[in-house]
Image (cartoon, rainbow, N blue to C red; front, side, top):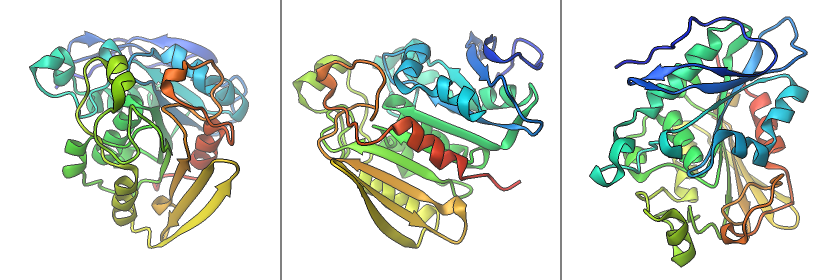
Length: 299
């Protein structure tokens, strides 16, 4: 399958650069942001996946990952989905047109290869984070490209049921999940989007997702995380369940946001009330990066 960068990988300057890329015959550029003050050693790479119906730049304004990347000293790649929908395994059938034919797993693997090929990035510290459709895409990547990732962060999304059925990660992957209990777009218990508002916003409902607790149980088994859960509370609305195993690669952290909606906790931009309540108990961006920074993939 074709997956070729248009340009020869070369070192890019600090700041944000549009990187040309083709995949499956389509032009699919991505933004690569490098910190100004890089140390002599290679820096981590975070892949940030937007949700359905929002572009990569606007989503980054929600999360503030660009500012954090400059401050903490990691590289940030912001790829874009075709028609702003990632093929996370829920968009099968002729009703979805070209989305069902897009191999976004291979595309994201190509983005990782292209970014690493430009020098100065650490292949042992590649992370992926996403929200909503971007989160379920990150879940699919964890299932199908576990060996490429040092850790995965998900907000308001788990994994497509169809992907979960065949999910066999080749190695343990540290997983962080943040999910609101009143998320109508990605229900905490799993299934499809619920309620008139959710159906109106999404127009076409994608296939079902796995429930949060089922997703946790899957990774406890897949990662061999036999210790836990240890529970911590973040007042007034959040509890965190953590599991661990023989190595840090087994680490799992699941944040339950009581009454939380389909939102990014600590969101930096205004979000329509239709998406539900946004928790201010913690900053999801900081929590995700703190989790990532503790994990390095074995060589």
